[in-house]
Length: 351
Image (cartoon, rainbow, N blue to C red; front, side):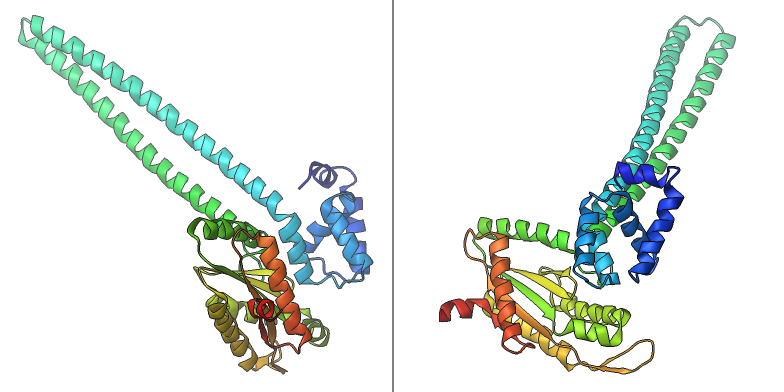
């Protein structure tokens, strides 16, 4: 959250702004969910911000402000701020934990130094001892010192064990934060940001090993009409179904992502166009073969289909360029009837 929004949220104008936000949401038929409220609060409190500009653009175009749109806006404009805040909190906790352990170790070092001095003194005393009483006194002193240092060492061991558990907990928390920041909330596939980063990495790896890399783009056919007919919640149900098929066939070492709205993308490292085309046909056929039902009413929804396009990366080609060629192949699938896969390499050969 930006400093301006943070100040507004905690300032004397916050209630007035909040009421204005709710009025705006109502006027645009947007439900006052926590996520929507956060997005629209940014829109009102930081009108020059990137989020407000993008939301304003969508409003001016008359785009329906669906939950899908909200999820995409949050992923693009809020996830990084949330991630930074959570990483900062985890870092603060880790610093406190390490400071506590450091103090415990320093205390143990001092205790051991004192114990060493006690042993040295006892050794000298025993050499000069002349009667049993002196010896007994020195032995008692050593026994007391030994018990004390043993107790302190056990305390240190427990503290270190507790600290190890806390550090592991923080590590797991940060890993969960990382997953949340790179995962699409609706489908549990990777999100757009994660896909863009993975595509750069995959291209570099392909160049390093001289291996092929193929990229596919998939889109649900006539999805806007489906949404208009059945509503956005049912539309979300369809997106999740399509994503489940894509995620299963596009599992590791492949990389599947929800690219935005009803569009998906898959990276196929080490696979050529012919193999990828067969995998995409498998996805297309499975999705088209399923008769869907509306979860809330059990009504028949019929079937949905997808169109897909693919392109194999050329040596030295950037991820953006191969994405453009895959998009062009997808457009060919749409233009020539939908519910089909277009191999962009065959188009290039024909041209």
